[in-house]
Length: 481
Image (tube, rainbow, N blue to C red; front, side, top):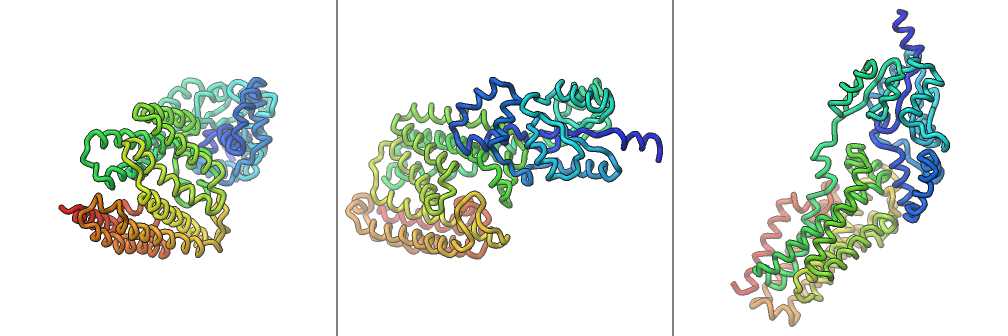
């Protein structure tokens, strides 16, 4: 073996954890889990911080369990580290994260000989990490893999620097301070990831705000359409803020889901602090816009936030109550449409929406349960459903959909419909259209051919567009045109 190769295997390789070995930051990961467990910890965290970052990390790590197996790891780096280990090289996990979390990661990876980490007294970051590694291995007696400018003091004391980054400027600056031996390039956060985070395709659900205008035959009144449009924008901003918040608190469940694991936070594509800044920004902008339209709309928006937040924190884990909450979130949009425009409430519309949206919510749960059964999993992670609930969910969902059609049939024979439609009997044609659409949705879901949220699926489904066009034609004919 050559002297260069001998030196390479005798010099230990120290590896950073946050942003280097994993694409995320375990401090933020553990903090989010703590707050999800009990939001009141937000009052205690600043007190812990007064004792220093090391104490803060120690106190949080004592109270949370991070699923290290599901973390988004830098696989190319891990493959390289495994090769180095096989060649006989000593690997050290050197991180500013708390030792308790770092040891769990090291045990899971199974290639590290030693862990050097923050311990509740000393925050092993930057210069502190450089001093600790020099004390342990001597100046220039180790190689170091890091990912950011915080690692410059460590690279300056290392024999060689290994860089894991998506930045185009970091390697150049690192070369002025250290000998760079290897660079692992990672993609930078893209605008596409940002837009995926906001879920713009979900904005179609907020078109429900225009339904009161449509059913009251006031869709042609410009002033009211403008108010509904403002409410639509407010709800889109609010919903995006809630989706971001949900992604932050649902990291573990998302990472075990076949498609949700690709979401920007779950995959490590976007940093978690970005979401913590974005959530209040989106919610505050939404609230300001809602207040400009009407205080009652702002109250409805506040109720929507309260329902969605409670759903994300706890309700989604309670079988059946979760789908009733999902259905209520759709109906809340109808109420917001009424409050924004001042259009009188329709008893029939509210009852119809309750049944049809409950059916769609149950479709969503059915799809998740069906996927869990296909993968031989015990149930939906983060919920209270099990494999045996699949048939019951399907039965409840289809029944709820058919009850919505019954409400439509009863509406056709009501006094209210005679005021709005000259040929109200024609509205009975809506019933077979709805029956077909609902039955077809459940048939496709049962066959395992629906791979999206039912609303998203309908947006991509040509038959749904055809049924919608026929329904609008029936409404137009019934008005007497």
